[in-house]
Amino acid sequence: MIPKWPLTCAAMDGLLRHIAACRNARLPGARRAFRLGGVAVGWVAPALAARLLGIASFRAHDSGIDLAEPARLAEIAAALAAEGLFTWRGEAFDVRAVPEGEVLARVDRGALPVFGLRAEGVHVNGLVRRGGGVFLWVARRAMDRPLDPGKLDHLVAGGIPAGFTPWRTLIKEAAEEAAIPAALAARARRVAVLDYAMERPEGLRRDRLHGFDLDLPEDFVPRAADGEAAGFELWPLAAVLDAVVAGDDFKFNVNLVLIDLFLRRNLIDPLSPDGRRLRAALAGADAAG
Image (cartoon, rainbow, N blue to C red; front, top):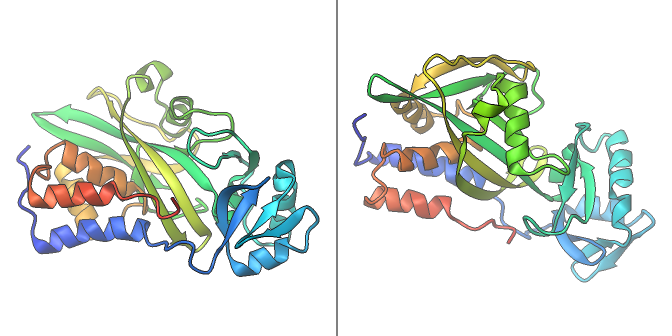
């Protein structure tokens, strides 16, 4: 595969645009700090803050609000979902102040952006070497997906549910989404950890992505086991780069993990000025701290 550098100005702008889009949150802005038992965990919009202060166990605290009984968060979130504030996803996530910190509460996945809570997920680059080139398995999200239906996606990607580690999530999602046997999925290598804070229609996304590379045999063909993917296609990695540069075909956060892949696989020279600029942009701190 011939590296594609230096990038044109338009191509560079196309890549940086994706990074900027995932880092468009400016915090605190109008939001108020959200605390559990005095520990800062998220950010809530003024209207929600006012609504929460009308619920027992919440109290004003400096520039934010505090839930004195963190264990009540799941119950309160369920009531807010019943009011139509957000879509209930039926999957509990751990709530922490910092990644790998103490679990302070658990709450439905749909509530995370409403409260500006951190979330973590795994993204797997399914790679195939063929004829001297590198190819990537690309998934098409099913049209019934609650977020970004029909967009292109990684072969395997998913949020880390309550009580799970990134590795356990990878094995689970690999089997469920692409029918990848556990022994094969276990060959994956963790290659990146990327953070972003993003304003989205569903609220404030404060996510940490654990990126993995998984080398797959030429004869392996993924199968959409749980219906989350409408299908899979094997793309030359250079064609994936062209698609990321050209538009928004891929789900928004997938682009971050792919740009990291392009740099590591030398489609973009990581030591060039463009490569260093992209690497610095990817390493930008979570705007939420």
